Image (cartoon, rainbow over all chains, first blue to last red; front, side):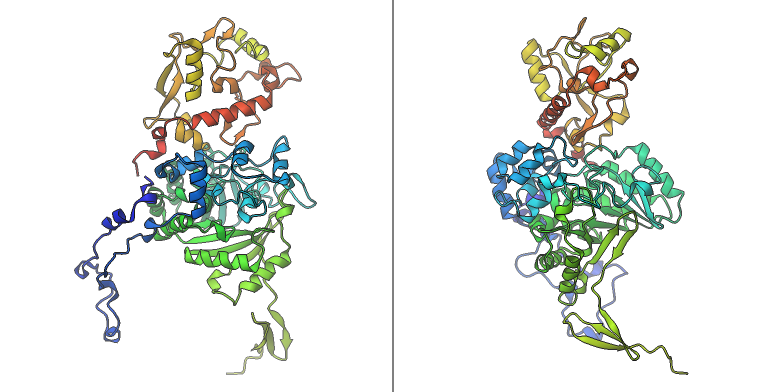
Length: 440
Length: 173
């Protein structure tokens, strides 16, 4: 099923459909070009010259060099077919200290995490993502995001296991109803790779959320009885760790509820397990439009050829993609890193959607950057790059207050009847805002 | 159950049927090797589709879902005697030493998925037989550290099951 991951270019070319003759255009197609376009090239009808660019082009994509050499070193006998299967990647996650030690040299801080009798959040890293991790630099951003350190066990003031108050806003187990018109449906607590800064570390990997039909039926019943809900966000854990059969059942049940206008899926699969995005999965998902996806990219190093390919397949299926990125100290808290990340995302057809201030989860102090840093990053992006590349910087208010956007202060003040506004180059401009509308 | 879990298991066995009777126990390839080496037999395995449809729903545990079941929904289990008892059930409990016993039996009554062991043990384990101050785990004599080690071994062995067992590779949709 995942053979597309390693289809040689020659074979992909054979799969290319010949250009459709113009006579087969449907009635919906626009009529012949009007005279004003006479000089323009007939876009739809050009014969490809020379080498055909295969569709989808991403199928012929290359693989990340770091992952390639990691695989050669640690999984030399694993054939490409297995390596590129998401099931194999999931089953062969790095789960233990001894596995880690055989692949990277651990720092004292990292080793310290394993001397604690019980870590709250399990260790899990796909072999693919492990390949992106530096074996000898404990400060490497991707390494810090998935390898536990002793700092996880330090509980700082103001931290909580459930800072967002999800438990108190949960009418049915695993269903969070915080905003009137939308709900968060947690379907599983399993992830292929556990982020050490997880906002839901109180539940993930702990067996707290089973995707059992009974529980989900209760959630569907609640949604069906609550006509105000027009948007359901499926999250977890990682919903894509559920098999196609169950996932397709969940989506179809939601689609049967007339007032549910859109369904969203939150997943980190394209970043940590891009092999999960298979033609079979995509064929299934596209039956449930309008379906949106929130992805989770943290650092430009995650934007590998594999991740590009996964996003391209989702985008080609007509699924609008957004990325929710958490601002993390020492990982992505610089304008330069964030700019590289958002530029990659746009090329991957993923809209940088939110930049989250790191939630005050227990044991996350070492990841939290000050709010001033987040604002500095937004100031460094706004105006300097495409508007689409600038995420909304939000604080998810502790206590269940929801997301509150933070913006750099652009309103300088008011002078006479004009508003004084600061632009991205620090110049101040007047916008005439008269309250006295002249009589007609 | 076995000689090394005398207390609660012995109390349970005195009351009637135990977890060694009428249960289907999945065997890892490692279990099969160890039992075959110890007993010199090879006829203790069968492939069987479960009668309980909820057991087929293992979506909370992708590793189990992918490796334990064959495409037809069957999985490798320990054969039972005609009276439904486990083949290895003797008058004093399990005839297999702990190190040979199937990992599922060693871990019983704990419940778990690939990433964690539940705080609450299996509901079928008779709590009513506990005396005050006992927990199910303390009464069966399984130290948690040992259980974690078996749990890890179980999942290391599950994934050695043949890849074409994976239900998710079925050509549907």
